[in-house]
Amino acid sequence: MTISVTGDPSTPYQGGVSLAETLGGALLTVEGEQHTVALSGASDCVNDVVARYLVAPESPAAEQRCTL
Image (cartoon, rainbow, N blue to C red; front, side, top):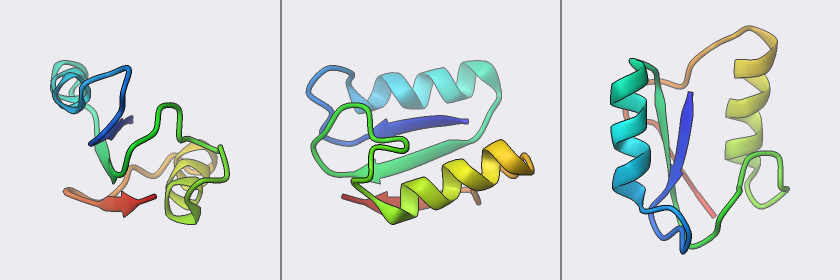
């Protein structure tokens, strides 16, 4: 699973999209402006998706989005 933030100041969003496509994995789009969002406490939505992925592993639904 790749997490890509639309306004990430360090990693362009499209880079995350390309990485998910290259790996053939799921993409979680996060709308906001931040770098390193997984398990940071910035979004319950992101934390829930990541926890499910690590425990099950259950990928996010296609086109799932979270916000900061």
